[in-house]
Image (cartoon, rainbow, N blue to C red; front, side, top):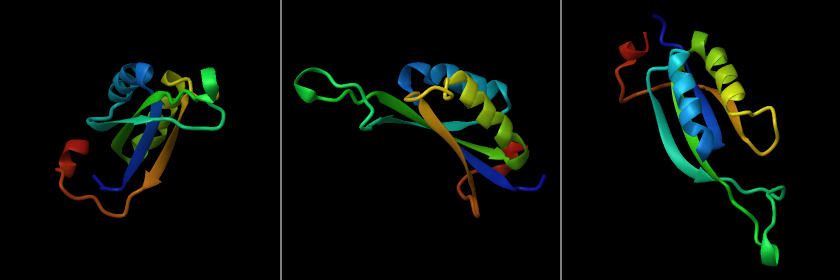
Amino acid sequence: MSHELKLVVSIVAKEKSDKVIEAIEKAGAIKSTIMLGRGRSKNNPKLFFGMQIEPMREVIFTLVPKDKAETIFEVVMKEGNLDKPLNGVVFILDLEKVGGIDLSMLE
């Protein structure tokens, strides 16, 4: 296998993350790294006294072979409802080098 890899970064609502991760794995991703985050935007709803809601998010980093990146992207779009505003974001990054993992696990 060529080790041409992509990093799919998904930022989704915490309550949707388990569903998104399960779908990512079902689509062929072996492992993901998940970090807790929060969203902040001028579009976030306001509460009393002008305070904004900062929704909890999970940031999912999924390292995949180049040929699986588009499939994973589409799965995250669907399962995270990312076609609607304020539900999150997903994007794909090119990687120049990767170290610290056994790349054969991605085959």
